[in-house]
Image 1 (cartoon, rainbow, N blue to C red):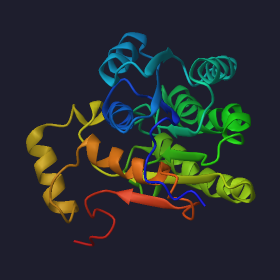
Image 2: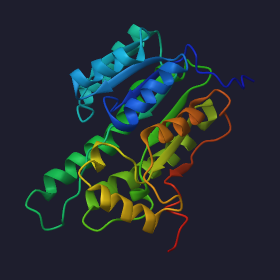
Image 3: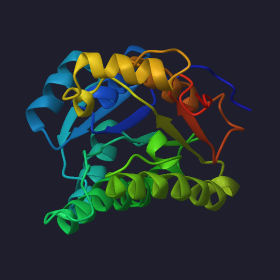
Image 4: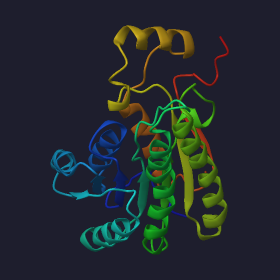
Length: 252
């Protein structure tokens, strides 16, 4: 049994990798010796992150809501980087929207397309290559919004709750093949999605809601993702791990 704690030489796909948690994950994987496919809708941002990752990373522009484009991009990655061992489904969109908003239907469909449907499409496109790996790993990025709910956020909450369910179902389906599927539920993290929140509001929220009384950093999520994709992480699958500074543990 390969219980290595190294991903050196492994091929990893990270979606939504031009910024935030995706960027931190791509940089960390590259620093650990992986060959990284930096995937994002923002082609220029993806190229910048790939350059930061070093010579063993490549950038790919992809709208993950486009099923045909997913198939083409995954095929290109597998060809360019010689296989796929790790998939991190991180791409997401902010979807805060009151129920009576005129834009609600459009925002709902976009949230589900980007943060749920795209996950299963990426998994299915990668599956032939993951099956050829001796330590295939899938990590889906959900949210603590999948474990609870914030008012006015139904599209995002529904999508992220679906990611947790999808993770469990995939883990059961793929477990007999040795492919692990896990899920991370970040809490309040400093990313582009939370940039609009004023610093004093961040401080108030963190002190009221988290045990650590602060917002988290993207790198803190990336390190948990790394732990789940190690070859040695071979007996953990189907779980949703909160990375939330103790938000889900604290009652008051």
